[in-house]
Length: 218
Image 1 (cartoon, rainbow, N blue to C red):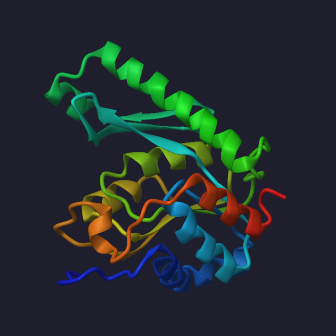
Image 2 (cartoon, rainbow, N blue to C red; image 1 turned 90 degrees about the horizontal axis):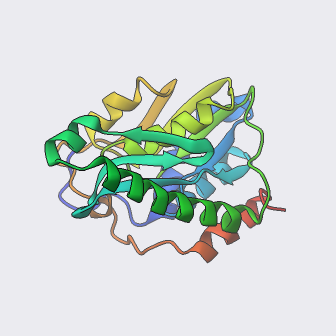
């Protein structure tokens, strides 16, 4: 649905609305995983509404060396790696540059895992319905890395959910997740922040606080 103004007030309001669309999964006793940082406030509202535990799933975008805002792939916990080989070839990104960026982002990913979970392991996902939540999906590379990590833990069902996503990304993710739940799919997507009235950066402290409130880091 196209809108002339941002359809979501902020991440918390978006999470409340997303939770309504995910209500059907309440009976499956799901676990909700938020993608830090911005996906965690959204996920916290979903977890609260569904009475589900909340945890984080740390992934990092791999930015093109000379255009770091443009994703050429993503990495996730457990050595998950997703790369857009066509984009890498088209832009002439060298293998050495890709390896360097992977190393830099891996170090930051490891730091965030320790910070957000307070040195505790991820909650067990085997046999569970897992709902992976982000605040928006542009290319889908970060979400694909997240789903790769989740699949490696042998869940029963994997649901990818976001308030807003590009239609092409949604189509791609339907091959990766059992179900994809998205409220808005604007054809002219642009940046995720364009679909929020308030898109202030989520801090590390807020991520830890939200997860602690849910009981996931206790």
